Amino acid sequence: MNPAFMVTALLLFQGASQAPAPQQTVLGSGTGFATPVHIINSHETGPTVLVIGGMHGNEPAGAEAASAIAHWTIERGRLIVIPRANIPALNAKTRRIPGLDGDEGDLNRHFPVDPEMEMQSEHADDLWSLIEEQKPDWVIDLHEGYDFKKLNPDSVGSTIISCDEPKAIAASALMLEAVNAARKEGSPSFLQLRHPVRGSLVRATCEQSVALGMILETTTKGQHVATRARQHRIMIHRLLEHLGMQPCDKDLLLPPVDATDELIHVALYDGPGASSAAFSTLLADDSRLLVRRLGPAAIQNGALERFDILIVPGGSGSRQGRGLGAAGREAIRDFVETGGSYVGACAGAYLGSVSYDWSLGIVDAKVIDRKHWKRGTGIVDVEWTDHGSEQAALGEGTHRIRYANGPILAPANRDDIQDYEVLGIYRGEIALNGAPTGVMPGTPAIVQGTWGDGRAILLSPHLESMKSDPEARANLLEYLQWLALISASKQGTGAGK
Ligand SMILES: [Zn+2]
Image 1: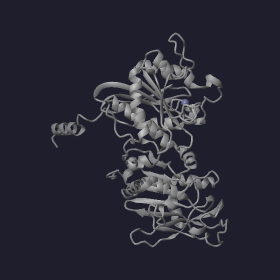
Image 2: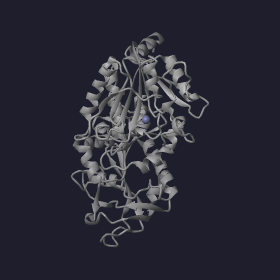
Image 3: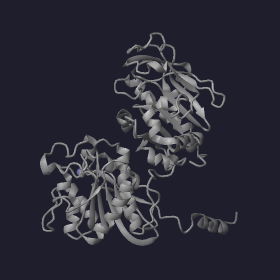
Image 4: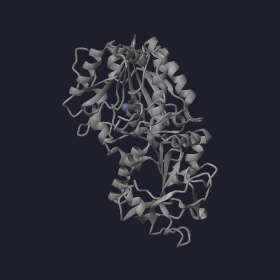
């Protein structure tokens, strides 16, 4: 090809509309608080919005939401995101910095309103310096309360606490309208509050007239992290729209999947009927994984597109299936059909089977002895099959695995679904609450099916549980790597993914 033509073609391909590459720096480099700062630019000048998550370590939704927002694109202005502002507290899952009490340990009490006074910690000073340097027009800090303000005046859950400035009040009214429109029927509405607490970052930015500010509070009580993180995203998204920044979709959670990306993108279902804590703990220890929690609304809105694997954990299969709704179940089927992997454990295995009007029907497996589904909990022996051991991933031998009312599986013999392969077999048995003995031993504990271009794996017991053999837990993590490597996306052929 003519070199001059090549240059032109390249410029055309890149196009004027393509946003400048996002930048990443580190705040507090060399300290225990070192944390990434994402700067998202656009071609058009406009407002700069700073979003901060994870200031308090026991409020996970803010960090979860900001980690997703860090991958958003905008058409105007600048977006700066610090997803995990307080890493020591986030790692300890505590409000305060480990080892420090009272306001000394509370990072969001380190910002004095008086410009003559010093910041109360080195990390607060670093955060403040970043604000002075980047000069955002808006500072939005993501937090969570323990109860709904509307029901319990002692908590600030489900509120926007805004600077007492007309512009900020007007913007927060729009954000409240958006988040309230999306909330579950019957759940208490978000309320407008003013006057952020003294010592908070947002109070300082307001009082020192550095920027307009808001604290966005969700409510931890009785709500999944995925639900709360989506509420944060809806509010930020509405603000960016209001400011004319033209953000991408609010359910964009990850950078695009591509063949050069070495991280495995894992979606962990966190909605009705899901208990995601054990998987969350297991996955958090593996730095090769990029994990996001998502619920039915995001799945229905196409959020799975950028993931390699969807994990549906234990809980209640019927509540999961019904909570996902027909649209959510169809989105999962499409995800697997186009090359994604489905891993369903216990309730998630019931969900993947063909047996119920709420199940996905992506593995040719039916649930037997359904009458005695509540056959009890305990530790049971599972033997990896030759097929299981051949897959470098799954290892070999017999393992002690946590069991909790998981499905007893058998071939469904459906013509429209390929037969599954058995990776693990129950050797032991649990038969309580009137369940007959002799049913469980010899049945498949782990099966791997094919659905379209993707794989669907049903785990009847809880390999992910802390009570399971540590080697089996490690095997499961290796198996996830293997699944992602054989998936279309990591081979660069992931059309539509
Ligand atoms: Zn907080």
